[in-house]
Length: 91
Image (cartoon, rainbow, N blue to C red):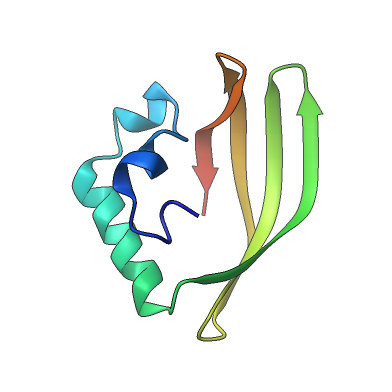
């Protein structure tokens, strides 16, 4: 996973321009540092997905290597040039 691997540029490639306008390199770096403190991502469990045309809402839980878990997170994805990208986050 790009953000867990510290690959800032690859992680940004999964975001739409709407998010990129508000998500700076320092924001991404800060998020990667937080994931590192938690030992990295161990598992992502998708709990629900709703897809309609080129828009999807995905609910999921993240489990980190140190045992900490975040539950009931959500993303809205949209297709851009045939690829799913993150349009909005709900953390």
